[in-house]
Image 1: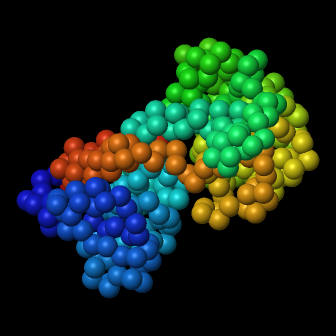
Image 2: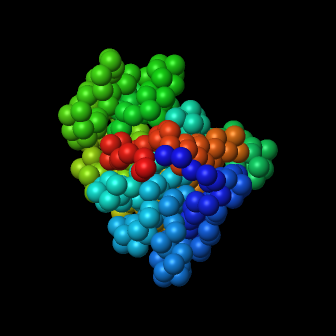
Length: 326
């Protein structure tokens, strides 16, 4: 496909987007911004011009159908469960995400969260800052430790593998559950999440969202982890039954939990906020300036590559067969 000038190509930016991504899109394309992914915010003539979407918000089938010239949806983030990729594929619309560039950052965060959870490091710092070390004495010994733990990873993709490498360096044994075994991996595979939970005491979820994983970590899974169990979620909040998790933390079904993601962000359930044996982060897994800029560049590179006729750099699985339109 030959394009005289990409400045003639209309790219829609619904809602918030990283400022570096916005700057690159505005420099290369005809950028159109709206408050949210709502077709009623666009005049009909404008809808007919939109050939690409760049966003980090929900893009459903109705919104895709409302844009007849749409060719590509560039999603900011590795998780793309907010985009109806299957419907996009059926309409010949490419969907891209931003994998790889955030893998190491998220894996680092997962290990930091695990350490915070097991060794209570944020609580120990608060003890010092509140003057209790001086007034009361040393922070109480933590019941939790990484020593002797057996880790299970729910979702052994790029990020899961990066976490596994770090856990190995800490001396932990590794097992995992995916829909299918991962080729070339020596870690113990468990065909069900319940089987994995029964055989480990530290469960780290890196699973994507969607109907297949909705509330997959439920009361039965948590009970299988046992009273020394630790649960960490760095994947998607929708994969966890948060009521069951809060109950398991309150009654000692598991020892502790560390969470970077929640089902209805930024609304964290009060029962989890009250849980002293939970370490909670505001979805900061990839939130360094370095990594978020790299994600913004990859999003823009996908758009530029697509409209230059080179194709998408990082198509999602559902749309790998979608071809550039000529």
